Amino acid sequence: MAIDEYSANEEIIGRDQINDLEAILSITNTDVDSVIHTVEDNADAIFTWDYEKGQRPALNKLYEKAKHAQWNGETDLPWDTEVDLEKNAELARLQWSALEQDVTGTPLEHFSDADFIKLSIESDNWTLSQFMHGEQGALLCTAKIVETVPWIDAKYYASTQVMDEARHVEVFAKYLDEKHEGHYPINAHLKMLLDDIINDSRWDMTYLGMQIMVEGLALAAFGFMREMTPDPLLKQLLRYVMSDEARHVAFGVLSLKEYYGELSTPELRERQEFAFEAAIRMRDRFMQQEVWERMGIKPKEILPVVLQDEGRGVFQQMLFSKIVPNCKKLGLLDAGDGWLRQKFTEMGVIAFEDWQDTGEEYEAFQLAAPRAGQAETA
Image (cartoon, rainbow, N blue to C red; front, side):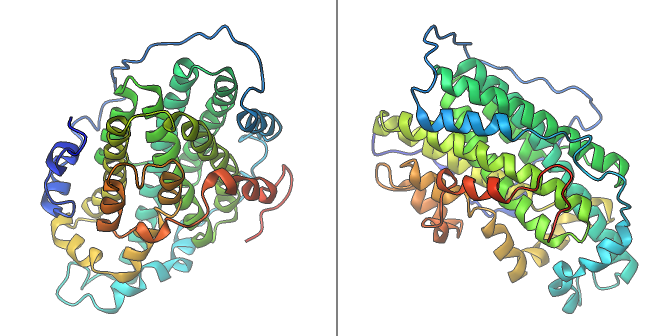
């Protein structure tokens, strides 16, 4: 690829226009009934015979914090808490208020209160299900980082994250099975992104795709759901998970900042394109077409209405509040001719570029994290 060339949108995300709703909805899962999904992992496993601990002090500091911050998903959360899905959905109805005010001529026109409560329950179930699937993706990716990263300090820390991610999958699955109504299959856009991350042979792409993009968006999304849910069990579960996730994103920022300082402009451009693809895939998955289908509504008929809702648009933009400043700190935003800045501007998320990056922010999450046996506060 020439230095002054980028791949076209068609090559990166499979369509020319990033907001082409028909193209977005055309991507669906074809194996939703399959229990096993296999992805080819092309990476080399790297041994290092340099065992000197602490050569990268920031990573060593994260490792020490991670060892002291382990929690038990089975015993440290109040699983005996009663969860009333309908009551919680009624309390959380404000998220749909904008849609309910003017739905004349839309598929929601004849929705009853019970229908809107059901929609809220299904939306929460779908969101938590995608969190769970994404955490399994993180579990696989972090295990891959242990194998592929060449630094012993990074291997040490990544090994703690493998345990973190296993615990996250465990608690989301337990919550969905015991307190909710089972779970949704993985969204096709999220699945494509996880497949791409795992399939790439370069260790830093695993970092970029998972630690910066997927985990960065998850950290913001967990925060939103924690603020919105009236369920004290879910609040505490999300707060524990967030205390881990902030370290995970910081791990990506601290590791890649050193490595990306050594890359050429064409190599950085490949990373810019990968970050853009990841951002689009994650944005597209939040259209929740599976929820609308379960509610008996054609996504193509309702999504134009949903996408016009100003509140929802702000919510989707805020999901990138962690990603954009982290990409800036890594030098990806303005590398070369600033192509990624242009793309984030088109997506409407560039305003977050000067927000605090997670390499600096994770300490606050750790200090605020509840300890075992303590009740969560709003």
